[in-house]
Image (cartoon, rainbow, N blue to C red; front, side, top):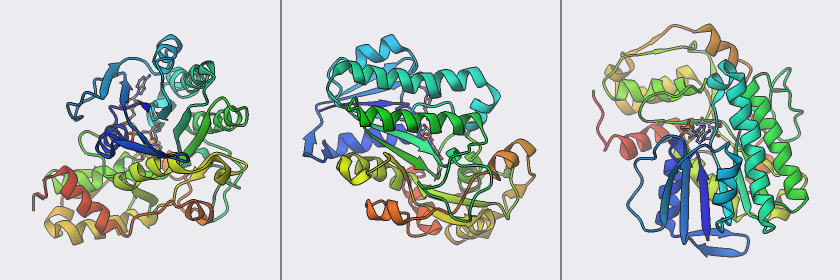
Length: 328
Ligand SMILES: NC(=O)c1ccc[n+]([C@@H]2O[C@H](COP(=O)([O-])OP(=O)(O)OC[C@H]3O[C@@H](n4cnc5c(N)ncnc54)[C@H](O)[C@@H]3O)[C@@H](O)[C@H]2O)c1
């Protein structure tokens, strides 16, 4: 099986690539398929991937229709579509967001359609597809009124994947991600970046000023779990998904204050003391429109699961990304 990951140099993409190489197979509804090739496409060079004869790292534009056709035409059986201009960046640069998030997704779907082989197509969507007046709990039955360009582009992408799947051009799944933590390295231009930064920076001995107030509610899922969810999505039979290929992934709903409490449990009071709070209007405005409670019925029935606790997520980050070392 030849797999393509777009956005494969990103936070989730690199970890998904490592997981697939380690597994050596991808389980689909037809059973485990040996992975013979893994193509990673990103417009920045991917690092942190193992030397492996199965892997091909391409630096290029995931919105370039010609490039996508040549890659997909080279026998790609499954696509994990993670490349995106994330929320704040897509809000600041409308044209770039449209080019990559909307036209890029369409170009990728068209490249799949041109093969005539119905590739598996698993796309990262976002809880940013919801917006406007919302019930206390939302899910796949909630009408989508995104309040950002990024959310709109993700919602349109889901509709495209649904229809391309209905027509048999791809076998699609769209995973609506809550906020994924804990991102190592520099923060990106996602409005949700604070949820990672307020854990990572103090654990690494650095001060961090959180741009949203303590009472802000968030719904978080670990990067370990989201990688597991992408792999799990590939294994689901299309019939199990029913009328839409979109699935809202579950997460843990808590306030920023709860996350800080968990940080204190794992890192101690000295770590928490490195945090301060100074709300930034641009971030607060985006974040307050996001739902944080999701009806878990469908995701649970499909076998997706949330993490056990915030403490576990933070401890796993210390193990996976900090070599077990906390600056106390
Ligand atoms: N991390 C989260 O909390 C979260 C939440 C909801 C949805 N998502 C979605 O999950 C996916 C992965 O997110 P992530 O956290 O790994 O983000 P990320 O920013 O770390 O990774 C996205 C990658 O896409 C690449 N990219 C952007 N434009 C490109 C282009 N034109 N051509 C090629 N590559 C391009 C970037 O270079 C980056 O490496 C994205 O689609 C994002 O919208 C993430």
